[in-house]
Every structure is written in C-alpha cells, then in structure tokens.
Length: 272
Image 1 (cartoon, rainbow, N blue to C red):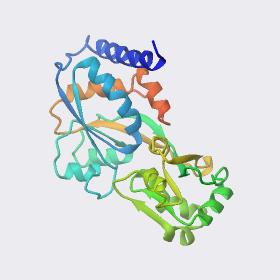
Image 2: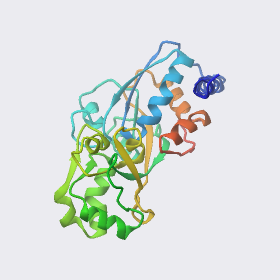
Image 3: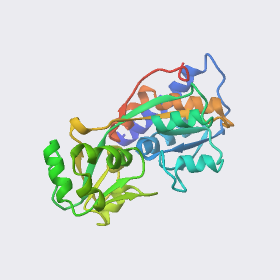
Image 4: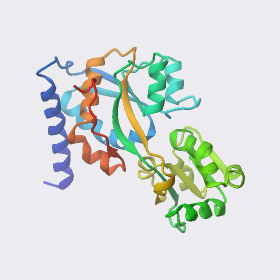
C-alpha cells in the first residue's frame, strides 16, 4: 500500500476515533448533515486536506465559502455575514472573530483557537531570492523591490499599518505596494504582476509558480492565531462543534504542519 493511501486511511480512522470519543457525552448529528463553513485563507490549505477525510468518515457534507478575515471585498467573511449568507462555523483571525462576537454574529464563548500562522515572502519561480534574514536585509530588499503585493487580510494590515513604519521606510515603499483583493498574493507574484509578495506562509506554500523565500525576521514577525467560532444563526451547532473538535485533534496535526501552520492545542469550553 502506498504512503499516500496509508496517510489517508490514518486520517479517516482518526476522524472516526475523534467522533467516537465525543459520543459518550452528547449525541452525534445524523449522517448526511450539512455543515456550512466560512474560512479565511490562513487555514485553507490544512482545511482542504482535512475536510474530505471528515466527510468520508462521518457521512456529513461540508459546504465551504472562502474569504478574507477582514475588509470590505464582496467575498470577505464580514461582507458575507452582512449579506446573511447561511453559516454554521466561521474560521478567521482571532481579533476579527472576537469582533464578530462583539457584533452578535458569533456565539460568545464558542471561540476555539486552531493554529498559529507566521508571515513570509515569495518571489516568482526562477527569479533571484532576495535576503530577508535580518531586519537590515529586509529593509534593503523592500527598498530595492520594484513592486510588492500584500493581502487585504491580517498580514497585509500589519504590513501597511505597522511593519513599514517600524522599519522607517513607509514613505519610500508604500507607494509601490499593492493591496490584493479576492486573490492569493502568490498568484499575483506567479503572473509577474509583483516582484515580491507578502502573506501568511500557509497561503504562499500551495501556490504554483512562486518560490517561498522565508518568514519575516523574528524581531518584526507577527504571528496570527486563526480560530473557529459558531455562528449565532447556525442551523447545525452540534455538528459544527464536532467538526471543530476534529480540527483540534491530534489526527489533524500532520496536515496542519504540512501547510506551514503550528497547531495551538488549547482547550476551551467549546471543546470540552
């Protein structure tokens, strides 16, 4: 049996064991239940690997809408919620999730931290990889880059409001920087529409046609926690909790790590 098949079988078995462990204290949602999820890009690569195994082991159907954690783009999670699109689970940067709780769109106390995500840089495949290993090297690279793309979500907000100012190069670099809406930064870099791209590492790694350079130096790195919460209008809250428990189970760890994320592994009332 191939390694890929063994890995998939382990994931399926893991999902079944997680659900079996939950069965003692509460009833499981019936097979065929539809769970609607809105997820932002930081968790997407791991999410896309984990949900098929969950669906196969449970018989549930996971329906997904993708969007940025913040911003006014038509497909951002805040915009989708404003249009009252149906949803059971929202997965996005923790500050944005807490804002949704304050607005009454996510159930207070349902927040579960899933992963930690770091910010990195990429260039088009085959082009020289600039040095970003130190803060001084990063400054030189940003000053020399003819164009820079950054996201409209958490990493981009940090870049445009804090990082450039901290580095003391805001006036020189911001005019040649472009915020990317409703598309991965890596895709823009792969087309050659930007020489340098900055986004969550987990959002850069899956993109074909780019070379990942590395993370921001530790002194200026901004780690974002991506979290899940139950929407106040959720039609399948118990099934939603089961899916979140799977995302935080040990069986989910390999897919999370492969995607460039770090599992949080914290417990909250929604997990117990």
